[in-house]
Amino acid sequence: MSDADKFGGTGPVREAHQFDVSALYRWMEQHVPGFAGPLNVEQFKGGQSNPTYRLITSNQEYVLRRKPPGALLKGAHAVEREARVMKALGRTGFPVPTIYAECHDASVIGSEFFIMELVKGRIFWSSTFEGVENEDRHLYMEEMNTVLARLHKVDYISLGLHDYGREGGFVSRTIDRWAIQYQKDSADAGTEETMDRVIPWLKENLPERDETSIIHGDFRVDNLIFHPEEPRVLAVLDWELSTLGDPVADFAYNAMLYRLPSDILGGIAEFDLKALGLPNESEYVDHYCIDTGRTEIPNLDYYVVFNMFKFAAILHGVKARAARGNAASAEASMVGNRFAKVAQLAWAEAQRSPSMRKR
Image (cartoon, rainbow, N blue to C red; front, side):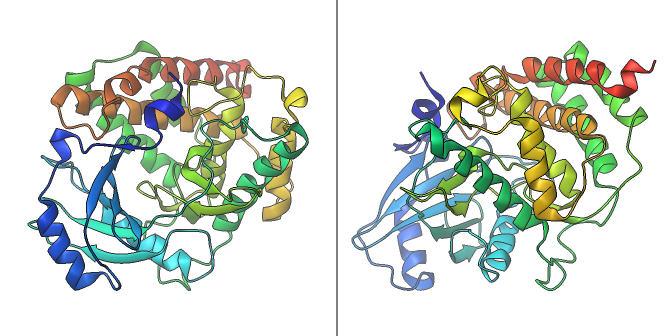
């Protein structure tokens, strides 16, 4: 079964994520302009953190994104932050869904939520862009790159997002945060030897450079909605991990698809890129550098390891939530089991890095 089958589309609302639809109906009547019933609710299959629903009415469709039920970590699943950054970016013309309404009253459906536009278009589950002609594939890859570069050039201060995160020290703080979370989740999800090696390696080889921009945190092809027929991004989704941070680290998360297999984040490491009409890693990096006015990206290998570590920690958390019974996706157990594989890939990349070769 492909990722598109497992995570694409909608289905019935899962038992753990059901809520009082009549209460939502009454709330939408009061807070969503133009809303008209009847209201039918389906749940998107994808999403490992914040449950997401498709709301179908007589004249329009919406998306509802909420915090999951149950006990939550402090600061986690902050749907209000997602709504805030999308509203701010929308004012600049950046491709994000329109936010229609927010609810901070958990008593309505059991947790805070927001309602946004349902953007219809084309979603790809792999950066091979299946279904696109070979001569056009590079255009889709370049568009993904360009949109991320555009995000990193946004003046977050002028948008009132100066307090959306902390300036400077992003990579160091992130390592500490996820290392601590990894240890906490180990009681439910176990440990992995290579993960235990990567953490000290990252701390010992931390680059001295530092800069700050808005970062997405999970910028990958399946979080983008493309135009049905054109290589143009209509919407960037899933802003839960967005913050102020290092744009190079954010770009490396996206670019690490070149070093991942196809069953991890839609990686393309095993494909013949030239035969598919896709740019190679060097060309992809050069494209980003041109769009952001850089001459190069020093320490790219380090940032790839950093992002593999972070993603491994996220998968570890999914595995832990599945063990505790409050994961957002029915596929959470399977996704969580990829944790060890990603940790092993991170350590393999660390061993190939220049800092290791010098030892």
